[in-house]
Amino acid sequence: MVKEFLNGFLSLVHGRGDQWAFQERRKGLIRLRCSYKCLFSSDGERIPGTITDLGEGGLALTTSQALSVGQKVKVFCPFIDLDGPCGAVESLVCWTRTLGGLHNTGLSYTVSPDSWVSSILQLLGFPGQGGQSKRRWVRAECALPARIGEQTVQVHNLGVGGALIESTQPVLDGRAHIVIGPYLKLEPLKVDGIVTHLRNEALHGFEFCDLSQAQLKLLGLYLKALLRRSL
Image (cartoon, rainbow, N blue to C red; front, top):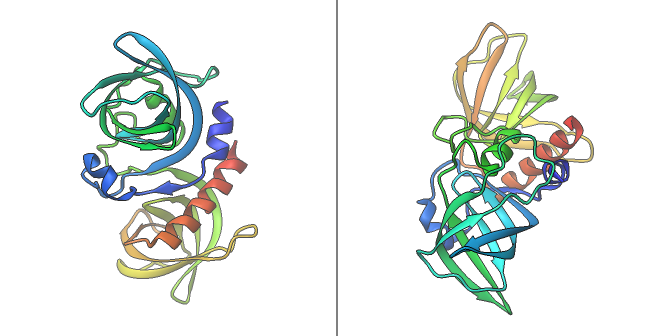
């Protein structure tokens, strides 16, 4: 089940409008859309639900039972084959809305090291303590052709926030435009960003700037394809 989750997440997004206000729209926040049945508890009763969105600071839950803003909820691990801590995650209901006969609820939490969320986020490349480090995004090892201006480079590590690039010649620090790919049947990914620093004579950091929804969607497809091949 864990491999299915890693192999089948639908997209990576930075938030979904006003309903995510409890996250304070933190820059770099990543949400993984999914659909996994789980059990959660409220006042000691275990109730079935479906996790539809998962991230460093919270998740979205669809239930048949209405929850109230401010209510405390425990969400139990939906995976039976998780290698690592799998304790329930303590959550707080931050928003809720009704859609048809179901209730969609947003939960916030602080990821603890013994929770199943911590294990899943570490498998996806997040830092282990809920994302306070600079590297707050999924990373995929790769070897993709790319260009910065007229200069040919290679991408060795790709994430939502940026990439690690290799060049036979130094790349000047500062703002630049990178074209990554194509890869498999995906069109080239064209992104503006900043060459952040020189790691050694060949490797450079490249930080993406202000991705549009279309760019973010295409980047998510790249990451999905790369992560699938790495399993």
